[in-house]
Every structure is written in C-alpha cells, then in structure tokens.
Length: 295
Image (cartoon, rainbow, N blue to C red; front, side):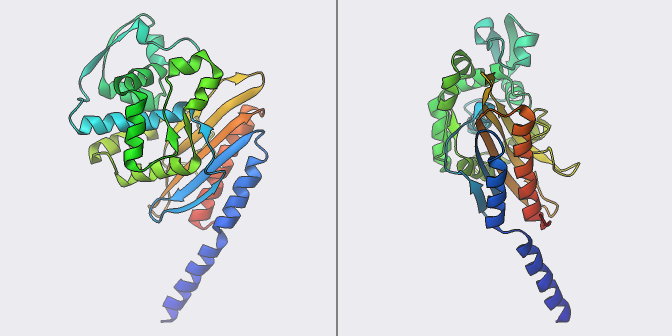
C-alpha cells in the first residue's frame, strides 16, 4: 500500500510539472518573438488533450498541403480506383516552373518520364516535389481532396490551388489554408488509421519520417534519435517578408504515446533562423510538457 501511495504521489508531481495553461503561455511568448503571425497546436493523440495558440486562425499551408493530397490519393488507391504501381507519363507541360522545388523537373527538364503513382507520392511527401504534387492534385482535383477531409470530419483545411498557380502570384498561396487545431486533428486521425488502410498509413508515415526538409524546425531542439514523421511548408521571401514557414507532424514520446504538433509562422519579417527557431521552441515546449520535464 505504501508503494502505491508513493507511486501515486510521483504521478501527481509529474502531472503538475506542465499544465495546458503554462504550455499555452509559452506558445504565446515564442510567437511574440517570431516577427509575424504564429499559430500552433499540440495534441496528445491517445487522449485528445489539445493546447493551442491562435489555433482557430487560418494560415497559408504551402507544402503542408501535400499531406492531405497524399492521404486522399492513398484512400482512393485503397478503394481500388488507382493502383500504386500504375505508371503516369510526365510531359514538359506537367513540370512546375523554376523557383518551385522539384527534383523531378531537375532530372527531366523536358519531361518524357514514366513514374508510378507510388514514386510520385514518395517524391511529393519525402522530397516535397512540386511537380509530383501538381500531377497528383490534378489527378483528383482540389474539390475531391477537400471532400476527403470533410468526410473525415476535418473542416479547418482548404485545398484550392496548385503549385503552378501559387508560383504565378504570392497571394494565391493564401487560398490553401489550414488552422493549427484542424491540422493536429488530421494528424491524430492519421495516427489512428482513420481513412486509410494499415499498409497505406504505414507507407505514408514512413515517407514523412524520411523527410529531409526542415531539420531545424520540429526536430530542431528535440533529443537526438527521436522519431518525427512530419511535413514542412515554406514560401518565398518577398520584400523582406516570408508568408509561410511551417512544420506539422507526429512525434513518438518515450513512453510510446504520440504527440501531434503543427506550427505555422506567417507574414514574418524575421530571418529564417528566428522563424525556424520559433517552431523548434514550441515543439520542444510541448515535448517537455508531455514527457514531464520541468520548464
């Protein structure tokens, strides 16, 4: 009995280390230093506990929108509408313009390549390839992707424009928007396997874990070796302002639970190190909160 009392006391002490209110205040404090508008949300997947700052506001997603596109394509593949091994012919007209990240365009500057649906999905998620994204979004159409989200019960994300369209005007990127709260809800549903087969879910999470972009964002201040499945999004900097510096993802905690986190830094006049640092600080604060570390 004495041992049980001691263990209970330890659990109460750990729970008291970080409260939702204190984490929210830390999110707010970091946001005020980011030189722009910041929205963040963190959710413990297993319990649904949510802490957010500006969580209901809309932020431009940039390449974060490739995550719901991938989920929608994979769901249709699960349903038999597409095959992951089916080949799609890429022509020069399919390539995104210079200035949009695309290893596929760099490798095949005049098109003329056949790629499987699986290869395009991996390129879009793990490498954030703009050509792969536009081909896959064109395969479904923005309305189908948005309808997929609504069917899941996710209302705070909107898919409306392609990479080519965003490249034509800086204002277009604001048509692809998300709220932090809805983004972590989408991540929670992904972790729980909602809407996708087990094989598709594991494949997508694997690609997100392979993601090489944004190493100084969510992963920037976390302990070495922690697994993070994430998707970044970044706009150009125009006249000293960067419209979007984002990272969203799932972190595996030491006890096996999962932390969904989304941080959007919008319309910031700060340099990249400050913007990425804000994301890293908020991710670390959430990590510390749910692992019981003192702040």
